[in-house]
Structures are given as structure tokens and as C-alpha cells.
Length: 211
Image 1 (cartoon, rainbow, N blue to C red):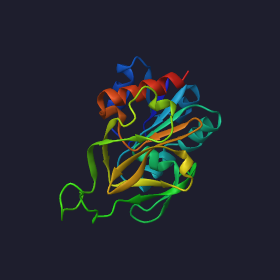
Image 2: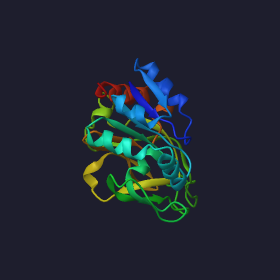
Image 3: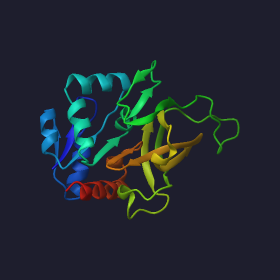
Image 4: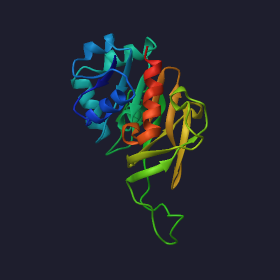
């Protein structure tokens, strides 16, 4: 069973349906004790960083999640779930994250030039389909082309202190980390559950690790 953490910070049914489409059992869990029974864990999230960390804490998910990661269970962070894994975020002030990965969450600048339109600026948030260029062969990216398209919706991105955790990068104003991988810890800036065939391949790969 893959446990999808429900702390009230994401629409989780689409994530669950994505796993169901690839034949994996996935449950949305509100009780943190159920993480101990899961073969794999998904940490999704949308909204503000500080609010998300506060809700994970108040719902009692932090310690069981950290314990599961230490035990070697595969964990997949999605969008804001990626941000939570890092040391701190600059979103609406400076806020501490789970500090599983050293680095900071930063906001896209409002004045990034649009290379496709002279004199224009890229919009923030970064929203829509974009390429992910693979820089390391992460298990969750197996079977995908070198630069698959995924669906993004975000104004903030992660800046890892250790570049070796980066498995995929994306261009939007500048190159940023869009996939991380360290041992049993995986995370994406994009939404695989909204990314059609490429996203389903990623979810299938993750499910194959959760055994």
C-alpha cells in the first residue's frame, strides 16, 4: 500500500487516481500511525510553505514520516512536498523545513526576460508544460525520454546546497532543479498526476519501488 499523506494541503484524489491507473494500491491517510504500514509514502502539497509545515506538524505526520525515511521506505514529494524536504524557505519570510536536504526554497524573480518575446517578461507563477532534462538516471524516471514534458504550477523553486541530489532540471528564466533523488527520497517540482503518460510512468516506477 502507498500512503498519500492528507494534512489538508492538497487535492489528493487526483494523485490517488494516478496510482490506481497504473495498478497500484494507494490510500489517502489522515492517521499518521498508518505510515508504518505503508510500503511507500507520498508527500503532496499546494499553498504556502509555512502553513503546510504547520499542518503537517499539527496533524502529527512529521515524526512518522522522518522515521519511515530513516527506515528506507521510498518517499515521493510532489510540488510543495518537494519544498518541505529542504532546510528553509523564503516564502513570506524565512521558515524552517524538514532539513532532510540542505538548501533553500526561493521565488522566481518578477523581471525574468522571456526569450521567446523581446522586451516581455516571463509570468510568475510558472504554469504549464515544460521539459525536464535528466542529469542523473533516477529510478522514478526510468523508461522516459531524455527530456520529457511535465506539468508545472509554482512560484518557488528549490536551490540545493549539494548539486548531487539533483536528478532533473528545467529552464524557466534560468535552470532550476525539478527532480531530486537521494537514496529512497524522491521529489518533483511538477505534478506527475497531471502530466499524462510521462506522469503515469513516473508513478508506476515509484510504485514498483514500494514493495
